[in-house]
Image 1 (cartoon, rainbow, N blue to C red):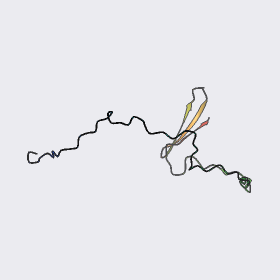
Image 2: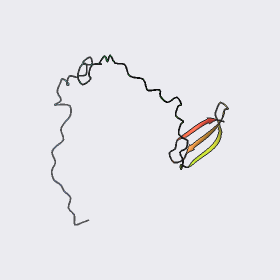
Image 3: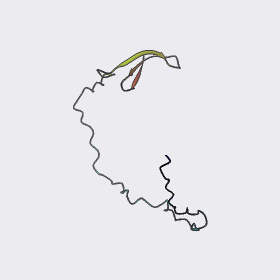
Image 4: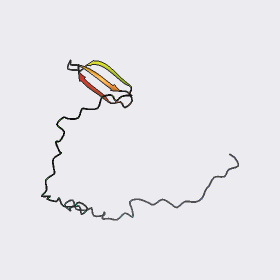
Length: 100
């Protein structure tokens, strides 16, 4: 380490804060000005179409946990005394609580 020399290049002096600051700060934008980027809400005469109801049977929820995931299941008691079963997907950390 004795072979290396330190870089002692002179630097510019730091600016003083306080004496040369402008007396009037920049004027903030008035709070009542509308944003020019936001378009005015459009009155659309066409209402949104409802979702088609062709499928009389609702979709069944996906099994929890999905096949191939590691899981654990245990019984617990809520603070109000209700017995519940907790099912936790170890791979994703998601858990579901059902009353026992």
